Length: 68
Length: 208
Image (tube, rainbow over all chains, first blue to last red):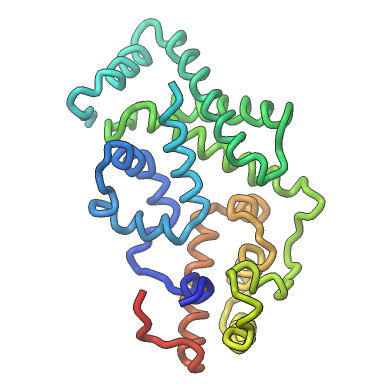
């Protein structure tokens, strides 16, 4: 399957940006703790694969956690 | 109800200080942290947006100040689902996204509704050497965009996919939100895929 076909494929578990933004700090902290947040929040994991702005913010939040 | 993770002394201390008699000093300390995060985030994402130097620092100050306002307003709603700082940093990361979205339109190349389909193969990494395999699919997609999308879905699809307008920038221009833009694009993707399945260009049963 090429990238275009993957892009067109949608997943009904995807909760959208709003719910992802609401829980992004929880997801980030779980990742930082070495947990597997995709098991507890599968919808967010789906969304983060499909939405580059939200994925970028997760990356930024993980980087920010290194700030002291 | 506030329920901090066991052993999360740092968050407990932040909350004590931000709610105590020395709260303004604590907010100043938090502001310094938010500013560091904003600068780091803009250094990470700024080059993609062509931002550096004094402009970067100015945006960082704006983002940190706005994030601090958000933290003050939302602190009563902090429920301890994460460390306090992760929760607070989220607001500055969001503010950076908003500022970058506004900044996008200042670039001369920024435009809406260009609808340049020649960009699509590169956008999705379609190998020119294998054009025979995907040319028909792209042509069918173009037909489907004309045939099945609403005007708004078409506009969002063209802006995000063909013109590579960031979702936050598009939300800013259309007076919308990233969530609404994403939902519109999500519905467009589903409609386009259904049409391509109906016309025999995609397999309905392909594994994810």
